[in-house]
Image 1 (cartoon, rainbow, N blue to C red):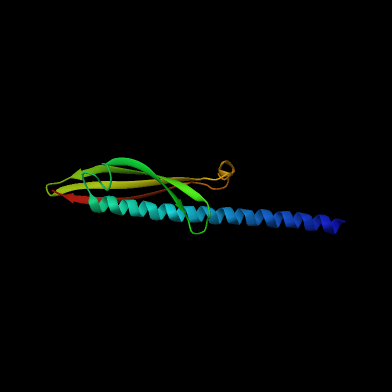
Image 2 (image 1 turned 90 degrees about the horizontal axis):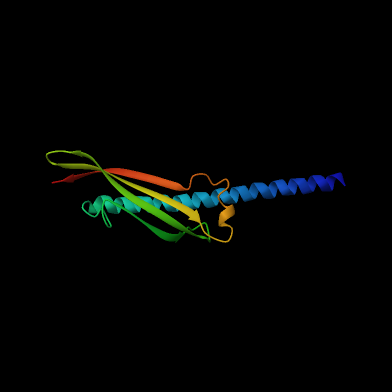
Amino acid sequence: MISIALLAMLSVTVIGLFSKMMASGSKQADQGVARRLAEKILSRAAREGPPNWGATGASYQDSVMLTSLRSERSTEYFYQVQVDHIQSGSLGELQRVQVQVNWWPTGTDADNMRRDRGRLSVTVDQLVYTGK
């Protein structure tokens, strides 16, 4: 009888451990997708430069629905681009382009997925010098 109780407790512990590992893997997959998206948006904004910075101006936001390779769930990623003037010189201007990506898993149990997930955002930035 005691051995059955110990076996049951061990089974519950192992199942809990594996579910934590799966949640961690899912977060890592989402974070990888968010970082790649942020870098792609930042690269486009820095390449195109003023006045539109890759879209509609010096400050804009949008969202995109993506699925990572490790997860069958789709996740909506919200991103915001902010361009700040740093310094003007006789040859041009120095600007800081910042992209912040936030996400929240969608699905039937999205309300319960926040626990133990930590920060659900990625921020990247780059200094861009624009000549006159």
